[in-house]
Amino acid sequence: MDLSQLVKQELLGAYSRAGGKMPWTPDNAMVLSVEHIEPTNFGDVVINASYSYKTNIANADERVDDLTFLDEFARLNFSTTIEFNNGTSLRGFCTNCLDVDDDIGFTLIYPGDQGGGARIKYYEGLRAGIEVVHQILIFIFKKKAPDGAFFLTSF
Image 1: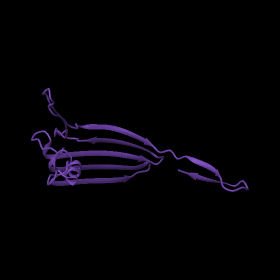
Image 2: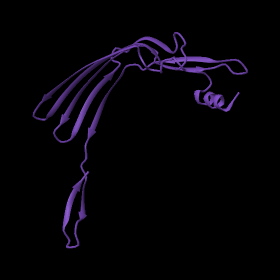
Image 3: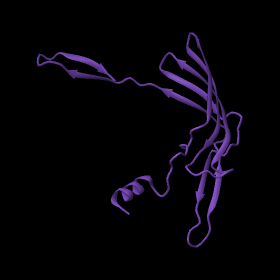
Image 4: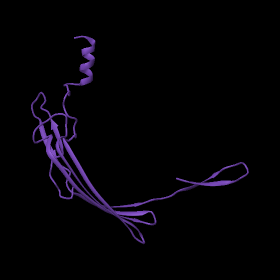
């Protein structure tokens, strides 16, 4: 085997991925998102709903039916945020709101010299919560000139 073949083999890894799909690259993908902003006296109310649908997704280089390949993948997400005028926001959210069990994650342990091997599947279930964020503005006084003049900066 010559040097160029050794270098090529080293760069490609243990097996050739030529002609294969990259992980998480679907055949078809669609995202529909709707957002409504309602101004109020105390701040803005932002309502957001999104739906994502993808078909024929492999979540790994290797294709193992019923483990690393999904026929379809769908998510419905929803959030409502109140952005108060004082820099505080309060957000209620839900991801995978329909709690679809689509096994997007997996662990594949290959058999070793002693045998064994395992397949573990899991999915991201419904996740809901409340988030509070408060923005803080910091002012720093810096000396501008030798005459003692100061200026105000913020970040």
